[in-house]
Each structure stands twice: as C-alpha cells, then as structure tokens.
Amino acid sequence: MSINNKLYKVAVPDAQYRFRANIFMWPNRTLFFGPLQQLEFHAMGAVTINVGLYRPFYMKTKSGAYAAYRCAVIPAGCKHELQANGNIVACLMIEKNSTDFMCFRERIQVQASGFTNVMDTQWIDCFQKIYEKKPSKIVINQMINQLLNVDASTEKNLDARIERILRRIKLDPGNNCSQEHLASSVGLSASRFRHLFSEHSDIPFRRYRMWRRVISAMEALHKVDNLTYAAMDAGFTDSAHFNRCFRDTFGVNPSLVFRNIDRFEV
Image (cartoon, rainbow, N blue to C red; front, side, top):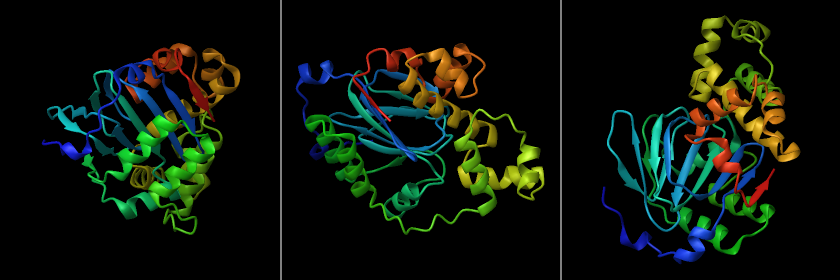
C-alpha cells in the first residue's frame, strides 16, 4: 500500500519518546493516546479508528499480510495484530450502538469486515493537535464531536428490545444473567435474541459483555487504583482473569498500559 507523503509530519524524537500514554473515557467512546510497539492478535468490542500521528503503523488479520496505514477503521470483533515500532498512535473506540457511531457512519463508509483505509487528513490533524497542545478533556471531547460531526438528533435506528439489553449490560456488566433470561425479558426466543444482538453489535453477546466488563474495570481502576478490586467489581473472578480478557481485547497486558500512564481521565 502506498503512503501519501503529504500525510507525513516528522516528530521531534525526544518529545515523541518521552510521551507517556493518555486515556480518556466517555460514556460511548474511549481514547487511547500513546507510543505503541506490537499488539498481539486481539479483537475489540467497539469500532476503532487508529491514527498514526507522524508515521504509519502496520496491521494484519490472521489471514492477511501486514499493510501500512496512517488512519484506518477496525470493525468491532475484527481480530488483528498491530505493529507501530514505538511510534505514537491514537486509538478512538466508539460504541457501535451509539449516536457517535451513527454520525461517524454518515462521514465514512465502513467495511463490515476487514480494515477501512481513511485518507481524510482531518483525523491526523485533530490528533496531532491533541498530542502537541495537550488540551483539557472537555476540549478534547469538543474536538472529537466536531471530527465525528456529532448531532444529538441523529436516529440510532436500533431494535428497542436489543437497545434495552445493551443498556442493561452497560449499567451492570458484572451481572451473569443468561442469554435465555435476557431474551425472555424482552419477549424474544434465545435464537432470535442471538441473531439480533450480533446484528446490532457486530459481536456475540458474551464477547460484548466481556468488552463492557473490561471498560467497567478500567473506570473502576481510575477510582480505586487497585487492579484486583477493579477487576472483581466489574465481574471478573480475579485479576488474572481480567488480565487474560484485557490482553484478548487490546493485545497487551494491562500493567504495560497503566504502569507509566500520564493522564487517565474518566
């Protein structure tokens, strides 16, 4: 894949490699910002836009070869590996069942499977400004709203029954209610529930619940700064269980993310 040289802006090496990870969390989006090496094969539970701030990063699926990208969309549930060689990457994760995603979809035609290469330089410009100017979380939210062209009046167009279940999982991800129980609570058969759930979230019920537990544990970690407590509060059996699920979701151990974090704002 050829890379447009106009997208390059050379970073100052010292400033680049002194930078430590930032994480910003909102109800329907999470932004990771920092230097990345290699992320093992993993699959996130939300639609993700990866942006290489100054240089390309490389990604592949299990059946493909590495290709270079400066900005790419990864569908929820798409198992992939990423190589960034220590360069700074912004990863914006957007909940598929949110207004944010509906507005984003109006701007960019996203492939149902595989990566979508994005050639719009606004994404690179936006995240370079966040990195270089270090604005407040409120300003970052405003910048992303503008980038996504967020309109609160946008119709989400979700099945009301599935939306109720998604909201229930989001509010209480540690609950172990079975699919059969949840399906019955909204008047659906188990098979119909599984079909509609995957259709609206792009991932199966159990993987979505695990995704929400990981996100919930991250939010709890921000409050208590105790990995074991945060993991169990979110519904994981122990910190080892959380570590495995985090690695399966993000391709890296949580300790490597949170050990040297600079800004973590929820």
